[in-house]
Length: 266
Image 1 (tube, one colour):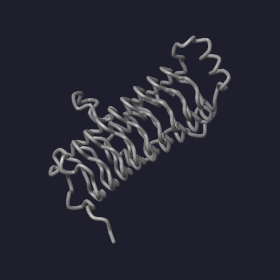
Image 2 (cartoon, helix red, strand yellow):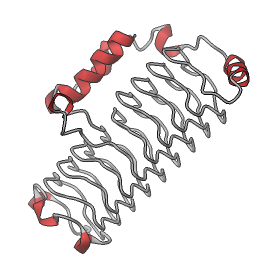
Image 3 (cartoon, helix red, strand yellow):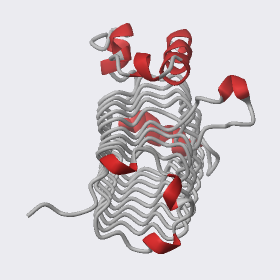
C-alpha cells in the first residue's frame, strides 16, 4: 500500500492537468479488504489512547475504513498511509495529526479539529469536512468533491512549493469542493485547483490565489479584500457582489476576464 500511495500521489500532482482529469483511483482495488475493512475496533483504539497516557498514538498504515472514531481525542496521531475510507471521525480531535498519504474517501470529518495537520498526498475525495477546523493545516492533496462548508481554514498552506521545482506542482486539489461560508483568511492556495468550487460567501481576505484555477467557481458574495488574483483563471467563474473587490491585489491581472460572470442573470 505504501508504494501505491506514493505512486498515486506523484501521478496526481506531477503528471499535469491532462492526467489529473483521469480517474486515477482506478489504479487501486477499491473493493479490497485493505481499502474497505478495519483491522481494529473502536475499543482497540480507545485502549491505545488510554495506554498512551496523553501521548500521540501510532496508527500508521492501518486499515481503519468504516470505523466509528467519532469524538475521540486523536491529537498528534500518526495516520500516515492509513486507510479511513467512509470512517466516522465526526467531532474528533486530530489537531497536529500526520495524515500524509492517508485515504479518507467519503469519510465524515464534520466538526473535526484538524488544526496544524499534515495532509501531504492525502486522498479525501467526497469527504465531509463541513464546520471542521483546518487552520494552519497543509492540505496538499486531493479533496475533489468534498464538503468544507462553514469550515475554518485560516492560514492554511495549500499552495504549490515554487521554490522546489521538482515539487512545484504539488498543490491542493479543491475541484468541485463546497467551501460556501468557509473562512480562508490569510491562507495560501497559490497555483491550486479550484475549478467549479463553491466559494459563495466565503472569506478570502488576504488569501494567495496567484496562478490558481478558479474556472467555473462560484464566488458570489465572497470577501476578497487583499486576496491575490494575479494570473488566476476566472473563465466561467461567478464574480458577483464581491466584497472588498477594490482592495483585491492584481485584480486586473486575472486570466480570461472576458469569460467571467460579473452580473446575476435575470
